[in-house]
Image (cartoon, rainbow, N blue to C red; front, side, top):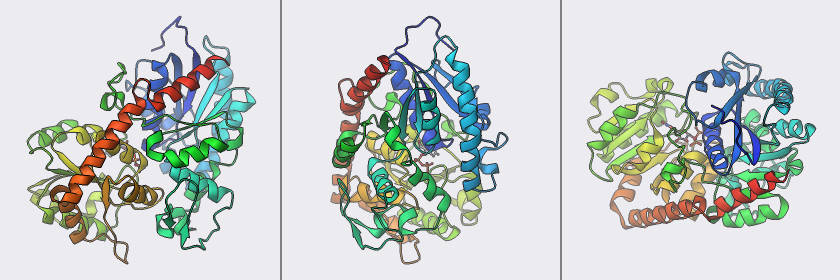
Length: 457
Ligand code: UDP
């Protein structure tokens, strides 16, 4: 609902890429902007708009839609990712132009477009209207630095070196680089998306990164020398961090029914620190063999576990597993942030998606890193070796993490001295994350600087 007659310092259009891991951080960032006096209009694709239009994202966020060319099903209904991205570019640019044209004669004409870096065409549209164009990184700066080096052809593909030393990053083996690089050619459509983020980045007035300075200090220091980049994260609901924002009842947009009551009731009955939470995010699927190994590992660990297995993935579970799991609860989707903050939680077996990583880090939950593809492998390396807030579940030569490994990782976190160190580190990151977004923290100041600059436009 629009608040009439307000003196907004600026009006930003926010354009996330249509996916759970992109919508969540950009909506949370929107709330921070609103807190600083900015008017925000979220622009999403028509198929998603239909799902979220009746949800109370925040009483202060307006929602508008543009077409991606697939109004009845979004990406899922496209012939291929390449065709989807191409159509979205073409149809989305035209629709975004029309929307900007319409809004230019509204009471509060927009002066800025903050677009997901996965959609660089939005920058060209913003610039054609003379607006401030801001790229938003939904992945880590470390990973984006690797993609930038790839775009600039400073990393030769297929990979030729056994190790890579890039500015501000630890030494990375081939297998620590995002999967699109070390398995070059595996997903050309995705490869193009992540590399094309940099096709026109030089024209962006600002780049905002969903991370915090202390976490990626060295690579951020390098990036700010070449770009107008600011860290603004972790972009997770204020209620789980600094608790400053009032308008924070909704945690974001969920693509599925989160089974909140079932999960919380079940967690309430478990001892403190006893539950292993397992989730691989909104996209990734495990192979049947991997699902069965994980199922066995969880059972053998004799720990309580809460495992998110999406509907389409449940056929891969061993026969009768759900019914016979006395210590486990399997759900198709859960309210992850509420689960992570529950005192029954002991550790998180994660695919290391960037949002899950930041959420766990901000809440101080130790991780068992089980990356599958894309940026997850690099995140896993940082989690285990740099931030030291988790252990890596190492896969065998068939790229399967065996049940024994899973069981041992759980025991390592829950029972050993190394596990205690990891828990201490996790708490250290939790405090740094909170300090960063809290009043006067680095991310808070960066948002203020950004808003003050917008106010001059
Ligand atoms: N998530 C959730 N419930 C679930 C699984 C995931 O709410 O059962 C949320 C999670 O909190 C995170 C997002 O979905 O914000 C997943 O993003 P991430 O970057 O971790 O992984 P992706 O889905 O992009 O692979």
